[in-house]
Amino acid sequence: MNEDLRTYLALGDSMSIDTYTGVPGGGAANQFFRTLAGRWRLDDRTSDGCRMPHVPTDGRGDLITLTIGGNDLLVNRETYLARGLESFAEEHLRLMEAIRRVNPRASFIVGNVYAPQEPLSGFERAALAEANAIIASNCRRVDAELADIHAAFLGHERDYLCLSIEPTLRGAKRIAQLFNEAYQRRS
Image (cartoon, rainbow, N blue to C red; front, side):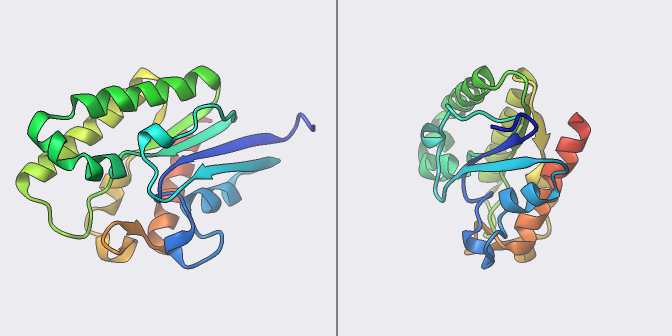
């Protein structure tokens, strides 16, 4: 194996995949991969519908992106709204720590969660803000760079999302830009 070849490990959910963009290679992970200078290979382990328990933690990379949490919030919505986000916080941190243990020197970029196209209630908006604050806090705890997808998508939901919650080609391009900006801050 050529030691000059570095690995970009993409982990997470549909925020990173090609499927909803309508273009092969149009997902955020693939778009970001094409911006990397030098010799890189892509190990894309993202999947539609992925939730935290399903993210593989054995992958190795010099650069890692993680988009996760939205599906967890949707599936466990009633529980989190009723009982709070403590279990989300613990599971998210455990996942990030497991990835960091295997990749102690990797550049690690983590995206937060955007709002869907449908309006959220005030309570739901507050819960999403709390979840994103948890993600930001966990980033600091494991020395990861936050890609603030939520802020970037605000006001652009019609252009950046389809099927209410899936990134369009433009949405994926914006996520890839955020990954690149975060990577540049780390370099």
